[in-house]
Image (tube, rainbow, N blue to C red; front, side, top):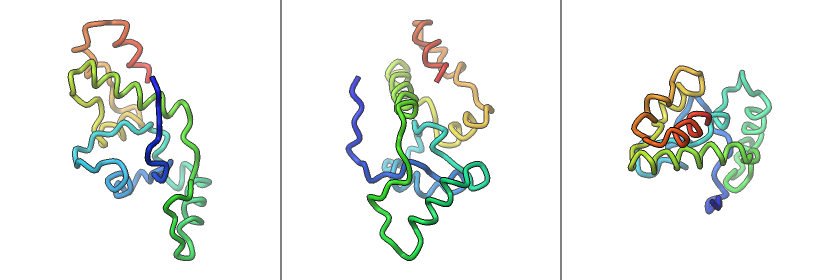
Length: 130
């Protein structure tokens, strides 16, 4: 599998309490399907470093498009790839909507139920460890 970023101007981190960046950069279809790694969503209290960097980039009326707020890690890419693989095995059914991903981030949503239609148990177990 090759992973490529054709839109490197997208932000690495997204505010948890404001889905407008998600909608603008990642949800052009309006479907609310979300395969962004949960750690890419932040709150100012959980991650003051990211919050400060975002504030600094947005300060003084600068155009922040193209300026990176962080680096996407391999783990983040693996999470997203796993979600895509799950959708393939689920015949097009999305694994997460944005609200479900937020719940998953807080350990309030379990993907095991969503994966039961996948007949190959090895695939199901691998994906459930996302």
